[in-house]
Amino acid sequence: MRAPDHVRPVDGASYDAVPTEYLKRPSPVQEALGPRRPAGWVLAKAGGRSPGRGGVVHAVDCEEAPAGAPVLTLERALDAAEKPGVRLCSLCGAAAELDPVLQGFDHGFEET
Image (cartoon, rainbow, N blue to C red):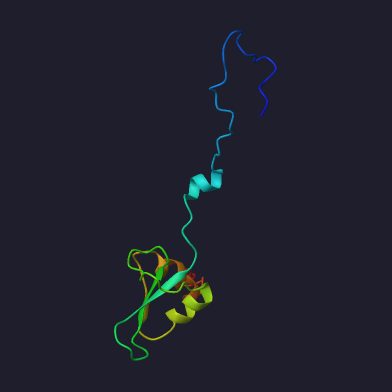
């Protein structure tokens, strides 16, 4: 950005300490939405080794998500969520994010 023609340095003033870097400003979209959360989900398996014991699907950054669990893509998270005994975490928003996809986006918007 260039200073307008009517702005001139003051004679005898030193501008050596004036920062010349541009400040990175967030876009209006980033300001409105805030920081993005990491992509993906993780499955916290229920105790025991027998199949079908269920578990909980969490967002990657959920406090309840197990450390070191493999990150699931959307398809894998939906596959896991459809298995018996598996539920979606409501604390981290996994339920709000994945449930409409599982139920269909028209769910809850029926005309009366």
